[in-house]
Image (cartoon, rainbow, N blue to C red):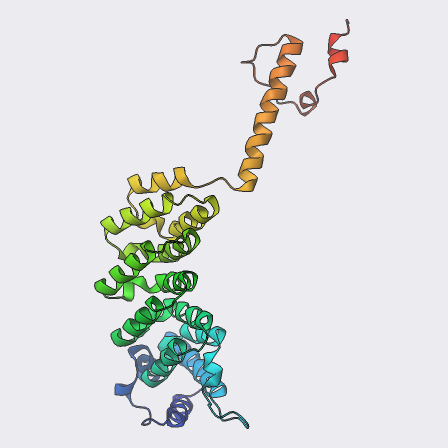
Length: 297
């Protein structure tokens, strides 16, 4: 188990490498403060170990390398940003700002959209100003598809946003004209339904069920399923009714209809009542041929 002194030394070196003042309780988010200066119990030790792993990863990613002029270049990879965003509460304020700046400053729009989407689970650990920058950057994406990707990804942290920012995201999602993009954005925001007002729930359900394309509608309704518990019962029913059948469900329906037709024909041949249920015996499921049925005893 790593000692507190070693953890503090590691964090100090990480911060000094970022050219800011050394570690102090006032300069870090609350989870880090608890991890480094909290009581001696197993939960705090777990936090310390988690913090150490994240800081080691940060140092490895931002270390000086021969031939690389920008030591933060590795952070521009959307997969790296998404990975670090899941543990953003283990980053210092400076590191969080650097990560957000790298995400919204990516040269490729698709990289920017993917990176912004990765911050959804870590929004609660960010400062209000950083959250606002992420939402603004998501709204500024030119392509509707990429905008939907960024908006949908932020859905996991919808509860952490100020009401005005939440409304801005909802309005942007509903305003997407492409059915696929709108479905993707609505589906992504489904995880944050509990943070929205009932009237916004109604708008989400109406928009999802009103999508004409069957597959796009399935994406929207499937995503809203993550927040179904937050919906009123009278809003859940339209979602269930409007949900398109899956290929397996459609196959099962056709097989059921075919079985019913076979049973009806067999009853006509045998002179049996249609209301009589088929026998539950396994052998009875094997119907004799019409010739066998017509032969006298």
